[in-house]
Length: 321
Image (cartoon, rainbow, N blue to C red):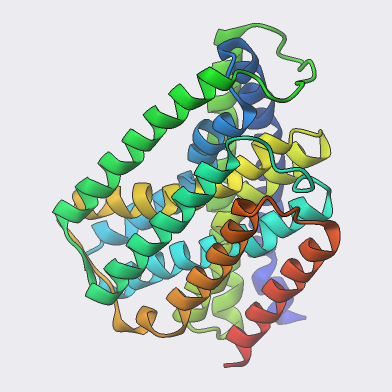
C-alpha cells in the first residue's frame, strides 16, 4: 500500500501523458490531412514527413538532453531509446496498425520509403559497429534526410492524391491547420515528457536498471506518440498517414535525431553493448517489414497480431535478463 502511495504522483503523470498523446495525435492527424488535401500530395508523404517529425519530437528531446549532460550513461540511455523506439515502431505500432487493417493494401510510393528505412538501418549498423557518430557523419545523415524529403515531395506531386480524404473539422483553413498541427505536436511532446517522467519514477521504485529503462520504458514512451497518431489515422481510414508515420519516424530517428544530436554535441560515442543483441534486433525487425512492403505483400491482421505478441515477448525477455 505504501509503495502505491509513493508512486501515485508518477501514476498521475502517466495518465496525463496518455491524455495529451491522444489529444495531440488527433490534432496532428486532422491538421496533416487538411495540409495533404490543400497541397495535393499523397497522405503517405504527409505521414512520412510532417506527422513523423511531430511524433519524433520526444526522441529528439531525450537525446539532446542526454548529449548536453556530458554523461556517457545518459547518452547510452538515449541511444538505447532510439534503438528500442525503432523496434517498438515496427513491431508494436505497425503491428497495431495492421491489426486495424491499415496495412492490407500498401499504396504507391511505399516502396521508396521502405528502401529508405533499409538504408537508414544500414547506416545505423555501420555507426554502431564503428562505435561513434562523428560530426561529419552526423551532418551527412542530415543532408541525406533533407535530400530524400525533397525527392519525396517531387515524387508525390507527380502522383497527386492517391487516397480519398474525408473532411476534417478544420475545413480548408490552412493557417488553422498549421496551428492545429503545431499544437498537436506540442501536446505530443508534453505527453511524452509526462509519461517518461512518470514511468522512470515507477521503474526506479521497482528497482529496474537504467539499461532496461532505456530499451523499454524510454523507447516505449517515445514511441507512444507514433502509436497514438497511427491508431487514430488507421481508425479513420487514413492508411497512408498511418504507414508513412511509422516508416518516417524510423528514418528520422536514425538520420534526423542521431544526426542532429551528433552535430550538436560534436560527435556521439556509442557503447559496445549495442553492437551485440540490440542493433541486430533493429535490423531484423526493420528489414523484415521493409522486405514485405517491397514485395507488395499485405501485412494482415494475423501478421500484425504476431508482431505485437513478438514485441511483448521481447519486452519480457529484456526484463527477465
